[in-house]
Image 1 (cartoon, helix red, strand yellow):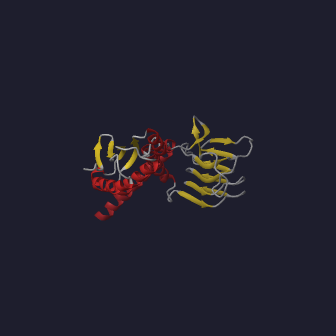
Image 2: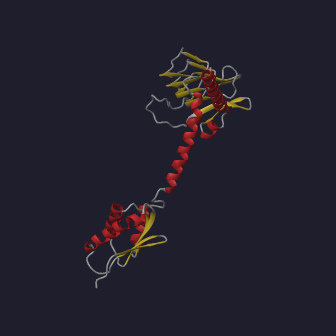
Image 3: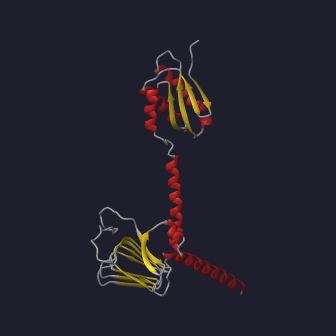
Amino acid sequence: MAEKVTLKGVKSGIVLRLPEGGEFESLLPGIEDKFKNAAEFLGSRHLILSIEGRNISEQEAGQILILLAENTRVKCEGIVLDNKELEERFQRLLGPDPGHEKELAELKKERSQMLKTIENLQAAVDPRNCRVIMGNLRSGANVESQGSVLVIGDVKPGASVTAGGCVFVLGALQGNADAGAFGDPDAFIFAMDMDPIQLRISDAMAIAADSSPKQKKGIFSRKEIEQPPEVALISEGHIVITELTSDLVKNNRFFKKKRNTAKTEADNEAENGETDNNK
């Protein structure tokens, strides 16, 4: 009786055993049936495929991998062959992390940090306490707000922004910016390209020293961004400029105060609603 194609599961993956004799093409229907029948059992796990019983070519191994992908949800993390040279070649193609588990874990971590950052930013850019400016502010322009200011564009030299809260510039800050104008030392100034003439936060002030111009990074510029976004804030009584990180935003006292204020307002609204209902 002719030897048949067999498929079995082992701890490290699955073993496909092929008969030594016969034409390889004649084995493909049997291989496909084995994968189809085992698909539900195998699920969507990441497994190593071991091919035993005969010495196959690179093209034949590729055909088997295609059948595995078409008939199961298995993610092949590696392949083991009797032909060690071919095995090494396939493993190099699959890479050290063919399931991309490491990459997915990093992406999940980045997404989690981004969501926390967005949650903290929402308090400062709430329409109720943030003035939004669309477009560039040119020389002579002066924008003021009791709350925060969000400029979607560049603040050109000679232009200024004054905010009781924070200043956000989604472009190049090349003019003057004043945050925490009513004495809030926890406010800060954010810019995609931090290259101001003068910064002020509460009672602290900093004037930029003369330096060679940096590459522009405004959102209306087509040039490649070279520097990460930066934040100017007060540290030990002085204004310092640092790169924006999710931890910096998450731990910033300005946002914490705004969140607490928002909660208080919501509580007051709820109490007022209950009072009105009781009348």
